[in-house]
Length: 520
Image (cartoon, rainbow, N blue to C red):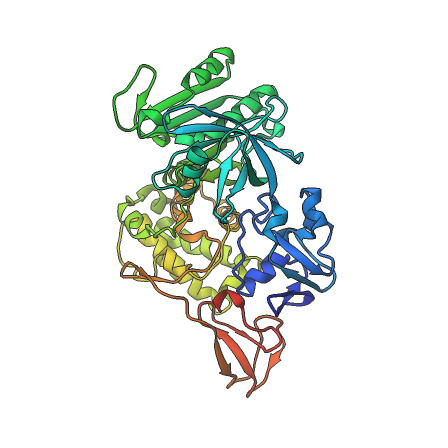
């Protein structure tokens, strides 16, 4: 790795290699920094410049007020000089907004209409962050269209013991001022999709962004089909049904389906889970664009179904309403519930073609600047053997693999949805080069998609042993016994030099590179 510049953060310098973003340099160095899309859309990774120039691309698409406060996006920053940065001043990220209306659209869901005091641009489907005076922050998706609606509107669902929803619904009144940040997110309609068929799945108040996306698509003359599936456990969650039925009656290319998993049915409501209705067995959704909003379990289940139905991962817009607590991995149950895939195993020549595809794939991985750093202390042959054993077990229904399950194998890795998709796209190219038919590729890709939730995360976590998450082992100061090179700047580390060893990643850092703060 040839350093082009350095970034100083929390007293430690991190080298930024040619072609590497500041975010990638920090993550590689072990910094616990929040991020999501890695493309400058969500703005979750926003930081503040202390000195130096992060580059023009680092502020693209940001509000002028944020740029004035020297905020920038590390994921889009490729500096040509050394820079110093810090975590952002949250006060600069929020604007005041007046509560214009509160309208109950069901017994448990309220439409909250806001008028920001400072002009902001938004798209339906994006989300904003609301902040209480005590610092509690929650995200809410935008349901309104700026070109047609006066207010920026969100749908707030009452959550039992929910600190933010209780405050918004019971204490905040029309005329009060609240603080918001945003909008951010990519779950909105793009006119470039005009001829694509769209399928949208939402549960409960997950309808909020989707109704805005549907209205916006119809407003802009969308030519493809638009199919909206709204589901809920109880009838109270199926709100705005009359409005949506009127939309369906007024537009020949718009379909509206509503389903319930519990309680008595009413006319026009189906029984069952919306994923099964939207992606029935054998469904072909190749070329479709998919929008997913609502409870995480539905969103991740629908991701798998969409991939198996032929949807390109880049055409999936997902906005799960994530929980505030850490999610426990479910990979043990998922592995146990997988049925053997004899068609897939036969297409892989009972393992012969699997080995060839994995070898081709890892040949590319081990020279890829984004993926290679995850394999610093693993030989290519060992990576191939472990992946082969794991996949062969899943495809054949055998249970001979005794290695780590997906969560524990990746517990220390900070992996975004974008990086997960990047890796899977690379593997699918290897599958096609290996001569696999598309329906076989879908089967294989669906298996990998099943474990996205166990692999994607914004911060390192400890291994789960006997149901308990273990603490991350802090960095260890060691004395070099054999001459080596630093995993940060690749300078020589002679015998006797003091270094910092990070057991989770197997990396050794010289004194100049410092201690990776994510493991402090």
